[in-house]
Length: 106
Image 1 (cartoon, one colour):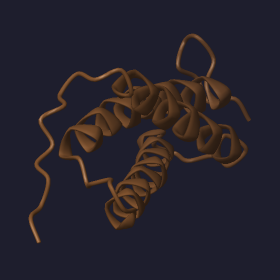
Image 2: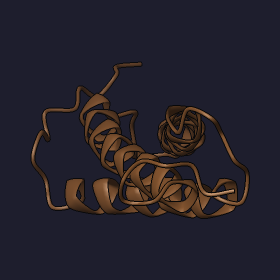
Image 3: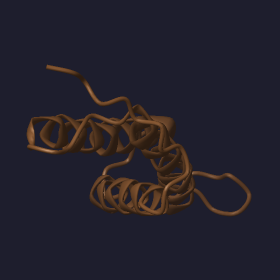
Image 4: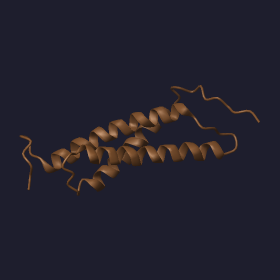
């Protein structure tokens, strides 16, 4: 049994990986924005972790399908989408609970 090596670094599906991971992270961000995290980075880390877990799950699932394989480049682009989503979540959570002058809204 030979393993197929993924050389598709910039294929057409990579934009979809970035977009889907961003959407997952943003959705998680919407859910956690109702919770006040004193440091907003916690919300961003939660969104990143959940979105990246979905990306890993998808790649593992792909590797078990006949004719498909685990692609590290898909995971690399997933990380890009997760990072963009985490930044979005950080800003959304921070400005949900702070005004423009960084004062906490009670």
